[in-house]
Image 1 (cartoon, rainbow, N blue to C red):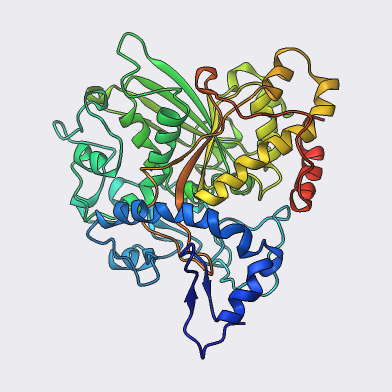
Image 2: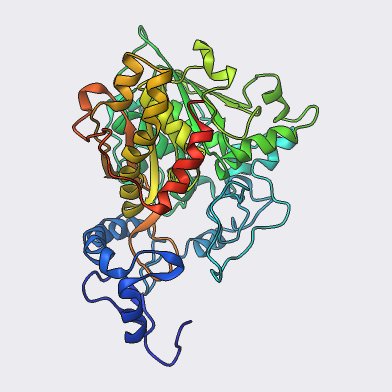
Length: 463
């Protein structure tokens, strides 16, 4: 309970942890709230992570609307409200359920700490609700911004962006110059989703690139996108991938609880009904001057999760060139265990993002434990190359994402840098880029907190 009679104190060691009083600090030193580790174990690591504060703030401050509050956070809802795009249904690409839950609540989710403050989502809100009708949004009706602020997907002759292979698009500044969009535009608050996918495919997994293909040698690229939720409200924004990757034919299949729910509710003549007929719910072709790339987005509605045992994934036609997940929470959601194991077994390129560097490190440190738990059963079910892929040394590099959503999220007691799509993790990548990260039968027994997750993964994968 917060003591309002005392000024909050910030830990002098890490500058990240905030306490209501010295007594609170002392009590938290050995044991944290809701069963979390005490600050004694986290202070030194927090100090290292706080070094990224300047990068997060610099990324935000390049935008005229990028105000940093006294507590270091960014009030994104205020910027949305300023542009009249704050709300749920009826706000085009900006539609959100509201509330304080970063993801949809699901029966398999970990239980929330008792006493934790939460604001519930808008009742009845369905991600992708616009696809339950046959209404197609235009650049204007989807973005709902001033014309000069809109990163258009349809162009008048002569207004197309330069061929992406002729420029270096490496961060928000270079993207804005390439697209000729003023930084007064709040577009980055949504476009961090497709541009983060671009970052994962090009600079983390290296499965494609803007200079890789040509008119004589096009690339067919199949991406499995796991855990899509709010992205279902802005599918046309992923046309940016076709502009960024010339001479590329992109097929992107979306999976997840929200996708399954949307397809299940699809009715005749609705856009979502196309998913039941294995047709794309969105297609786009970039201008010829931009490489005439194509994008086709499919929704997988047969199961809530990406299930490697499902016949859909057994067909070579459906085998992805890359698997991605944004703001994934790999250890927080048990269904990810089967994805992690499958991608290791078959060396499937797989990368995700996390909000915070600290949580990214926690995911990384859990991989050897998850793999070690699966090794006994894997030895009886797999042989040769698959078993070698599962057990061989790997590195799981973590990096600052230059296309993260601008601005620190609203946070609580620990003020570490935490932003949507903040940090990338390469889980499985190209052999030539893999480095040493030992996995063996001698891995120490997992902590009790992780043991429960690993027990659940036993039923979720490699059966």
